[in-house]
Each structure stands twice: as structure tokens, then as C-alpha cells.
Length: 137
Image 1: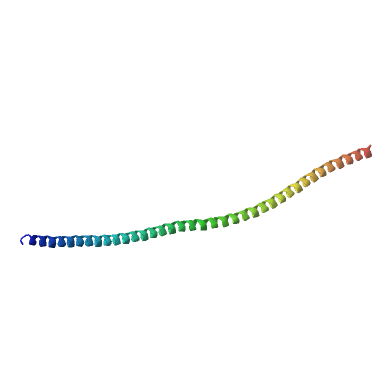
Image 2: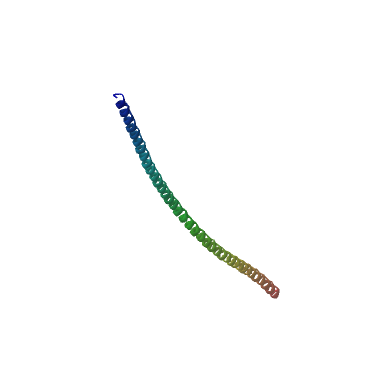
């Protein structure tokens, strides 16, 4: 009978060992699941943070691009206005140039007329002197 007790004790010890091992496995499994959930939460948080950073970067870049677009439009409008002003000044300058050329032409004609008058005066004086010489002789 002494041999039966150790067998019963061994069977009881085996069962306790199995229960302890099962308990360790379950505890490991629960810790694994908890750690997995924490990892998933951390991963989701990281993804949200990355998405937020990406949104902020896009907003920053878009803001700069939008500002550039507004500046480009303003520059285009100012360039068109400047081209209109240049065209208006060009027409005005052409008018002034035409008026100046006309004045120069009139002055030249006046100078030609004055020269013609001097020649005519000289010719008249020459003819008058010739007639006096003929009359006196």
C-alpha cells in the first residue's frame, strides 16, 4: 500500500502541474492579447498622428501655393494694366512726334519763304537799280 500513495500523489501532482501550466498558458495568452491591443491602439494613434501631420503639411503647402496663385494673378493684372498704359503713352508719343514733325516742316517752309523773300527783295532792288541806271542815262 505504500506504493499506492506515491502513485496517487504523483497523479495529483501531475494534475496540479497541468493546471499550473494551463494557468501559465492562459496568463501568457491574456498578456499577449493585452499587449496586442496596446500595440493596435498605439498603431492607430500613430496613424492618426501621421494623418494629422500630413494634413498640416498639406495645409501649409496649400497655403503657400494659394498665396503664390493670388500673387501671380495680381501680377498678371498689373502687367496688363502696365501694357495698356504703355500703349496709351506710345500713341501719345506718336502724336507728339507727328506734331513736332509738322512744326519742323512749317518752320522749314517759313525759312524757305523768308529766303525766297530775301531773294525777291534782292532781285527787286537789282531791277530797281537797273531801271534807275537806265532812267538816268
